[in-house]
Image (cartoon, rainbow, N blue to C red):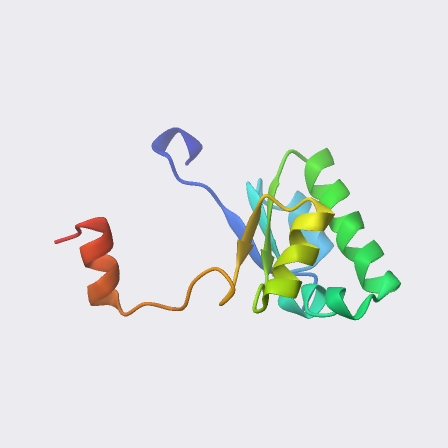
Length: 109
């Protein structure tokens, strides 16, 4: 799949069906850290920060990129950046778009 330019992403990592066991079942390229972890970062929650740091170290050791879900405020985005995420997702970056708008942005017919 990678030769075709297709990459795999494990969404909502750390919750429900997106557990550690999936990391060795498929060769994921990216893991998206669930927003339940990133939302607590601004409350100066040491435990949340350490869990997120551990996820980042694990992903790096496995050669995977990470995306932080839940960058809803400037403070959350700052905390996510401070931890070392290269990628984030949330309203602090951009609001959801209608498919017609996306098509215009990417010139998809």
